[in-house]
Length: 96
Image (cartoon, rainbow, N blue to C red; front, top):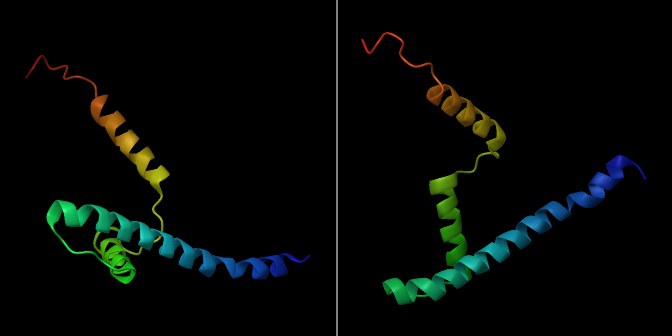
Protein backbone atom coordinates (compact mmCIF):
# COMPACT_ATOMS: atom_id res chain seq x y z
CA UNK A 1 0.00 0.00 0.00
CA UNK A 2 1.23 3.46 -0.83
CA UNK A 3 2.42 5.68 2.02
CA UNK A 4 0.11 8.51 0.99
CA UNK A 5 -2.89 6.18 1.21
CA UNK A 6 -1.84 5.06 4.68
CA UNK A 7 -1.51 8.64 5.81
CA UNK A 8 -4.90 9.58 4.36
CA UNK A 9 -6.50 6.59 6.07
CA UNK A 10 -5.16 7.67 9.43
CA UNK A 11 -5.76 11.43 9.09
CA UNK A 12 -9.38 11.10 10.19
CA UNK A 13 -8.14 9.74 13.52
CA UNK A 14 -6.54 13.03 14.59
CA UNK A 15 -9.76 15.09 14.90
CA UNK A 16 -11.58 12.14 16.46
CA UNK A 17 -8.82 11.74 19.03
CA UNK A 18 -8.81 15.48 19.78
CA UNK A 19 -12.59 15.53 20.34
CA UNK A 20 -12.40 12.41 22.51
CA UNK A 21 -9.55 13.86 24.60
CA UNK A 22 -11.37 17.19 25.04
CA UNK A 23 -14.52 15.35 26.10
CA UNK A 24 -12.71 13.20 28.64
CA UNK A 25 -10.76 16.13 30.07
CA UNK A 26 -13.94 18.24 30.18
CA UNK A 27 -15.75 15.59 32.20
CA UNK A 28 -12.75 15.29 34.54
CA UNK A 29 -12.72 19.06 35.13
CA UNK A 30 -16.49 19.08 35.65
CA UNK A 31 -16.32 16.18 38.09
CA UNK A 32 -13.49 17.68 40.10
CA UNK A 33 -15.16 21.10 40.23
CA UNK A 34 -18.53 19.66 41.27
CA UNK A 35 -16.85 17.47 43.88
CA UNK A 36 -14.48 20.00 45.48
CA UNK A 37 -15.59 23.59 44.86
CA UNK A 38 -19.13 23.52 46.30
CA UNK A 39 -18.03 21.98 49.58
CA UNK A 40 -14.82 23.99 50.02
CA UNK A 41 -15.77 27.42 48.66
CA UNK A 42 -19.55 27.27 48.50
CA UNK A 43 -19.61 27.67 44.71
CA UNK A 44 -22.33 26.21 42.50
CA UNK A 45 -22.21 23.20 40.25
CA UNK A 46 -21.12 23.58 36.63
CA UNK A 47 -22.12 21.90 33.37
CA UNK A 48 -19.89 20.13 30.88
CA UNK A 49 -19.77 23.19 28.61
CA UNK A 50 -18.80 25.45 31.50
CA UNK A 51 -16.03 23.00 32.38
CA UNK A 52 -14.73 23.16 28.81
CA UNK A 53 -14.87 26.96 29.02
CA UNK A 54 -12.83 26.93 32.23
CA UNK A 55 -10.36 24.57 30.60
CA UNK A 56 -9.96 26.81 27.54
CA UNK A 57 -9.72 29.94 29.69
CA UNK A 58 -7.00 28.36 31.82
CA UNK A 59 -5.13 27.30 28.69
CA UNK A 60 -5.28 30.84 27.31
CA UNK A 61 -4.25 32.49 30.58
CA UNK A 62 -1.54 30.09 31.70
CA UNK A 63 -0.44 28.02 28.72
CA UNK A 64 -1.29 29.83 25.54
CA UNK A 65 -1.81 28.04 22.27
CA UNK A 66 1.82 27.79 21.26
CA UNK A 67 3.60 24.83 19.78
CA UNK A 68 5.22 22.39 22.15
CA UNK A 69 8.28 23.75 23.85
CA UNK A 70 11.57 21.96 23.59
CA UNK A 71 12.00 20.99 27.24
CA UNK A 72 15.16 19.02 26.56
CA UNK A 73 16.91 22.11 25.26
CA UNK A 74 15.69 24.17 28.21
CA UNK A 75 17.01 21.57 30.64
CA UNK A 76 20.40 21.60 28.93
CA UNK A 77 20.58 25.40 29.10
CA UNK A 78 19.52 25.42 32.75
CA UNK A 79 22.09 22.74 33.60
CA UNK A 80 24.83 24.62 31.76
CA UNK A 81 23.89 27.89 33.48
CA UNK A 82 23.90 26.32 36.94
CA UNK A 83 27.10 24.42 36.23
CA UNK A 84 28.93 27.57 35.12
CA UNK A 85 27.47 29.69 37.92
CA UNK A 86 28.33 27.32 40.76
CA UNK A 87 31.67 26.05 39.47
CA UNK A 88 33.43 29.37 38.98
CA UNK A 89 37.01 29.59 40.17
CA UNK A 90 37.33 31.15 43.59
CA UNK A 91 38.65 34.65 44.09
CA UNK A 92 42.44 34.35 44.20
CA UNK A 93 43.15 38.00 45.07
CA UNK A 94 43.28 37.30 48.77
CA UNK A 95 39.84 38.75 49.48
CA UNK A 96 40.50 42.12 47.84
